[in-house]
Amino acid sequence: MQRNRLKDIWASGQPVLVGWCSIGNPFTAEIMAGQGYDAINIDVQHGALDYAALLPMLQAVRASGVTPLARVPWLEPGIIMKALDAGAMGIICPMVNNRADAEALVSYMRYPPLGQRSFGPTRAAVADPGYGVEANGEVLAMAMIETADGVRNLDEICATPGLDGVYVGPADLTLGTQQGRLPPALDREEPEMIEIIRRIADVCRANGIKAGIHCGTPEYAHRAIRWGYEWTTVAADSRLLAAAAGASVAAWRSLTGRDDGAEVKSGSIY
Image 1 (cartoon, rainbow, N blue to C red):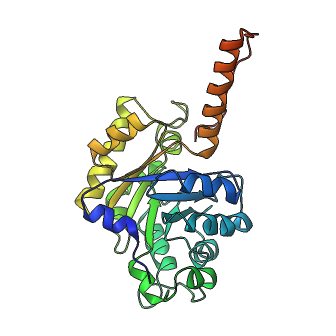
Image 2: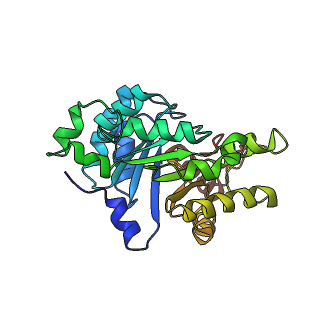
């Protein structure tokens, strides 16, 4: 089977850029995949889509050659295995709070004897001839750290055998650790949040796994890379579409002089 290209990028010492799809449409996924990202993640947790949309979106991503990833709704074996069978080469799993959660995630993603993944890669075997037990060494198991428990148990989570990386969603990380004292948002500037975000990268590095983070801007992603993050997401299809449409409307209003006070609001942190 084919090698996971992200591993080769990391082996060369380079960071990875992930595109994020939250709109359940294959054409949107195809557009995103053609823009030069190293990987495309399809968000089944908070995105406006389900498994019925995930599979054709993975098909649409294939032609670009980027690595397909999926964020599942929860730590649940059925959807994790179905996403892998559909062709995802990595799983981002939310709300991993302790070593037992991380061990469960790893086990759902690996065929025996390394785990308990059931064999039936229906689409994966078509898209990648030869797909089989070798997938154990290619699919990426990535745990989200976004709760107070997750931060408290960070060392034991990151030391879990078979875990490939950790992914930070700053909005939930803020809600989970600050208990409502700060609003959810990307690109945190508060010293207490930066301290947590940097500590996650440090613990990942100490355990030889990859730290990833969702960012709102390329500039913040660059800062995160300097802190030790090796894969970054910058915004998502919904936010990028809203920003581009808003900029186009604003330019039109400015050029035509039809400024009637209309205000553009994205409404999405992703």
